[in-house]
Each structure stands twice: as structure tokens, then as C-alpha cells.
Amino acid sequence: MKFSCDMPIDFTDEKVEFSSLEAITTMSRAVEAAGLDAIYVTDHPAPSSRWLAGGGHPTLDPFVALTAAAAATTTLQVQTHIVVLPYRNPFVTAKAAASLDHISGGRLILGIGTGYSKPEYAAVGVEFEDRGEIMTEALKVMQMAWSGEVVTYESPRFFARDTVIRPLPANKESIRVWAGGNAKPAIRRAVELCDGWCPFPAEGALLRTTRTDELSTYEQLQDMIDYAREHGEKVGRTKPLTICMGTLGYRQGKPGDPAYAQELIEAYSKNQEMGIDWATTGMAHPSLPEWLDNVQWFGEEVAAKVK
Image 1 (spheres, rainbow, N blue to C red):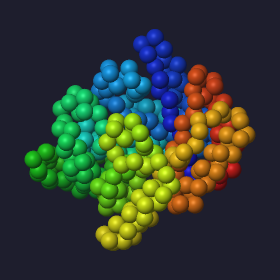
Image 2: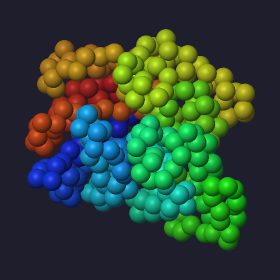
Image 3: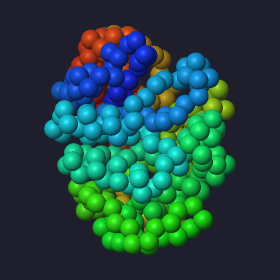
Image 4: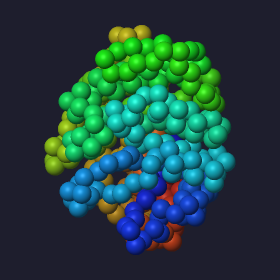
């Protein structure tokens, strides 16, 4: 089991404790020193004030934040979890991703998803109802761009004639792409076009917010995994599908509590037994020093014991 840790970038106009270059450097090095495998950020380029007031969080541009994280570390992988792919032209995204992967020596994991915010879609000028089709087409265009070949492509959405993307990704086999989502179309997209799949726990109000399928029990998770495997066999997939997700049904405990550590070990171990390769995790962060302590605790008392 490998672990990817959330980079908390909470800030206001008056407070930049977590969002300065110095803080990102410190946090990234702490995650690497704790023995975790990756650090991740989310993507909200144009959120609504209502979303922020209702519990949403400000973000830095994911490629900017992860470039700073990669520059501060040597082995830590950097993950977008997730980039909302339909928000951006695929050639622009391909360029940003290839640039980050190139300068980091192949450490980028490009997590992608369709997103769920209608106001944000409106702000960036993209049709919300077409987001699934846009994402699939954009991903195919990006993979063409990363091939190193001249791209000629025309559709009602995207057009390219004699287009070349440089630099290329560090790995000649292209950038690792993990697609998020619980619904069957999202699972099929991940199986057919991506290296990995990122389901996420969702129930109650979160289902209405994210507009995805419920995932609150291990039985539901197993059904989704079985569907992914069956679809892989149907389409002739030969490469193993990386699966990355958090844990199901555990309480939010206090770092430092041995009982809480054991609960997490058991939860991640259960995921591992089901064939899940990567785990996402987030730490309580009332302050930067406390977050750093929590990362160290998690690495020593949870992650190392799951491995």
C-alpha cells in the first residue's frame, strides 16, 4: 500500500500559513521524511462564494503548487487529486502536465475528474451537462499530444493542425493518469483510457453535491471493483489497473491515539486486501506545526505498519 497525503492550502487574505512557498517546501519535505509516497492537491480555479461559505476551501493552481512540492523533494510523487479536465483546453493541460512531469523526473500522477460545480463550469465557459463527453475527448487529445508525434485533430470542440507539445513527459510511456468517479461511465473511462481509477466514499448530502453513485459500504466497493475487472476483460485490458481511495466508515479520531491508529491500520489493510494499491489521507491542521506532527505520527504509527 502506498500513501498520498493531502497538502492543506487553507488561507485567507490575512493568513498564508499554509500557502506560502516556505510552507509548501516544509510540508512536502515532511511528507517525504515520514515515508509517505506522494502529496496531492485539489482543483477549483473559479469557485463560487456560496461554495466557499458552505465549507469549500481556497486552492492554489495545482500545477503551481505541485511544482513547488517537486522542487523541494527528491523522491516524493506529486498528484493532482483531481484536476477537473473539462475546465481547460486539452493542449494547455497537456503542456502543463508534461512540463511538471519533465522537470520532476517523472513524478507526476495526473488525477482527473469531471467535477460537480455548475457555477464553476459557468465561470469558465464550459457546458456542465457535456462534462463526461468533454473529459473523455480531452483525455484522448492529451495522450496524442504526449506521444511526441505531430497532432492533427478536428472536432466540434477542439481543433489542431500541425501541433506539437514539448517538452515530452519524462516517461516515454506517457504520464500516469488516474480517473476519478464512482459511476459506471467513469469506471469504464478509467479502465479503457487510464492507468488508474480513484473511487471515493460518498453518501448522504455528498451524493447530491458531487452527483455520483453512492459508495458507503465494502459491498458497494466490491461491486465497483468487480465491474472494473469485468469491463477490463471485456475490452481486452492487459495492464493492471491501479486503484486509489481513502477508507470507508471510520471515525475521525485524534492523531496520537493508539486506538485510532489501529482503526486506520485495519481500514487501510482491508482496502489492501480488496486490491487497492494506493490510499489518500488527510491530516488535521489547526496549525502548521501541529500538521507536521500529525504527518510524522501517521507515517510512523499507521503507514509503516500497514506496509
